Length: 363
Image (cartoon, rainbow, N blue to C red; front, side, top):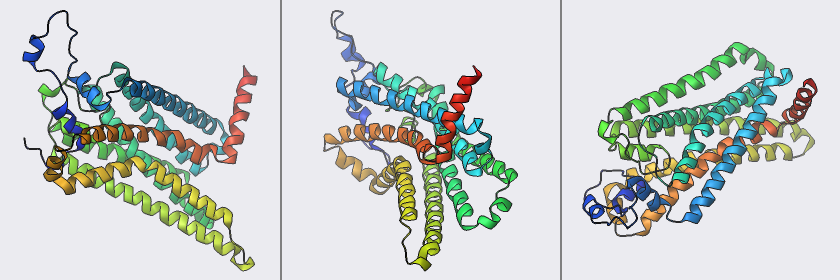
């Protein structure tokens, strides 16, 4: 058996899954229980333990509900407050929250459904739609976080020109561009994947609980053009975000340090703020880092890594663990983004209970 270059670990599940062949299925008596179909078989190769399945159902349900509540309340407080809605940083935050809600709505229920049905996701219209929406949301989130860091840099380091540079018209243009660029990149990636589409693949289960890039590319026979474009664009956008974030907060820290230097003091608050936001950025980008590391590993190792992995039975378990870990990490940013950029802000915390109280009085 020969595997194509850069074969991700997830596709090995199909090679080792003890699914019955038609001849084996025909030998089963009517009194014996029916053997699982291919989707259930692939699912069991990922999660053989019923206890693990039940725990994951609870985790994904709690994270999905919690994320929707936090994002919904924050978005409501920002949209209903005239004092906050006009500020550029909160306008960008609303854009980030909309992207997070769209991501969690398409991602969370899909994973929970697969866990409850104990089967992998079938390839079809919803699989492609979910892949496209999630790709758009990931790009939009990264670009919005980049814009938010640059906005803070302008506010702190270029305060005199802040209102001149960041006008309302330009703010709307920035928000529109984040979605336009995200939609364009995602459309190209999905279109390149569509070139490998075959009608015979419709309805067949993929090797995962979500249509993320590795599983979908494996199902479509590893279209090289789509994979290379996705990896290169994803790496460039991520590096752009990291560089912009690092530049913005480093310059802000330098400004804060220079402000107290004549007094021979250390601005500990500025240092803690910079460390907090940088650590939160790493947490937000952790699933993307995991994806980039996985892509780079399989690009560098190639076929030899796959042949070596066949000699070790634990690799398939590790592949399933990696897939579940990636799905869990994808749930984290929508949960923490409102806490980092919204509810941590004093104005937002003060506005939320006031708006809820006014709403109660109106009724």
